Amino acid sequence: MTAKHKYAVFVSGRGSNLRAMFEANKDGRLSYKPSLVVTDVAAAPALECARENGVETLFIDPSVHKGRRAFAERALPELRKRGIDTVCLAGFMRIVDKSLVEAFSGRMINIHPALLPAFPGLDAQKQALEAGAKESGCTVHFVDDGVDTGPTIMQVKVPVLEGDSVESLSSRILAQEHRIYPEVIQALMEDRIIVSGGTVKMSPPARSGPR
Ligand code: GRF
Image (tube, rainbow, N blue to C red; front, top):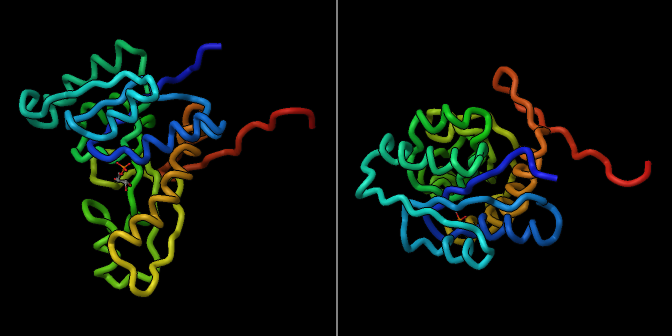
């Protein structure tokens, strides 16, 4: 059976969320593999992880394709020609151009290390610590043309503990990111996520096996 949807993952760095997708592929939580990994950083460690897992990578050089628009113009035909209709941002450190957001309307998602709308943008864990927040967490949300503003699909709370550093809080949040991102991607690939009027509903997977 051919899948109805195909997804690309956009990365700029370490790629632990990408790795979590491959792990979820292996243990059966995510039955779809990415078709392409796109990056703006030629030396991103995430690319190594893609290659180890046999997934094609595409580097778009931001010093050649300068600015959001040019980056999007380079990416869009590459995505289209592979039949990719879904984009998952996973530590992609650029704001995606409106044209690309529109082209993947309702099918572009991001993961953010805070409970949005709290602490959007960069250094979300540091922002949470500096604000004295008692809890933070992570959010998977649709991408719209703002920064971390699209409708929330799933959130998980993580307590902020006394003595937490950016590193310790980040690593507890990351463990949750790795759990929920594959779960949301699976739902998106199975058309189980519905947005209406800014509210998102994710239905559970169909039961398999005898009832
Ligand atoms: C994650 O914390 C994610 O929430 C944020 O960027 C970080 C990416 O980490 N958007 P990694 O590259 O997936 O390890």
